[in-house]
Image 1 (cartoon, rainbow, N blue to C red):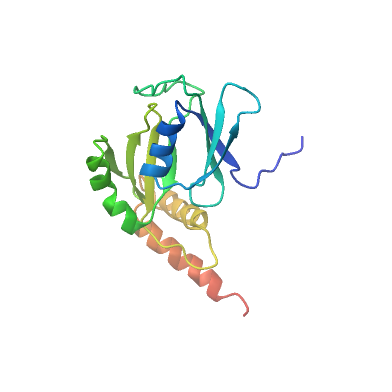
Image 2 (cartoon, rainbow, N blue to C red; image 1 turned 135 degrees about the horizontal axis):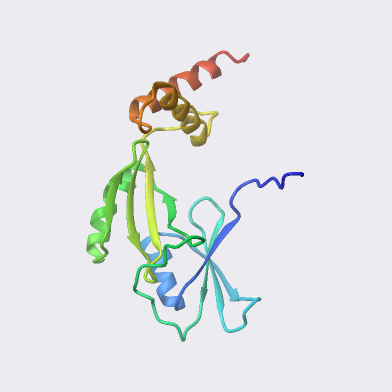
Length: 183
């Protein structure tokens, strides 16, 4: 059987409540520029809002002015989305807790070994994560290259999870392979 080869995430679409609620959260809190609005061509009673999460791809929200914010945790069952994660810089990450507190938004902060994460909910209960890697990706590589190498080192060493030492060693090994390439 031949493989269908994807080349990246095109967009994510979520079901929202009103246009105002969506714009206030996705643009107002998370800073995603509003790109465009048009009718949902598959469901005429809904609007389709498009936002740029920062990488030129899209996050879209179906809205309907007769809906209200759900204000409860989204379902976490088999087949449901557990959360959406967005990348922020280390400098920006440091200010996230204060910004959430200013808006009265409850959050949970976690150290994930190779990244730091903050979790909170959108107005409809969808769990959102803002995450920041604990490393700078070397030029000529992708973050996933660092993570794959760090994972191999972690497994090789029998460690429980990726830690900063694995990241540092992975970057060192990647840099050595780059330095051996003909210039």
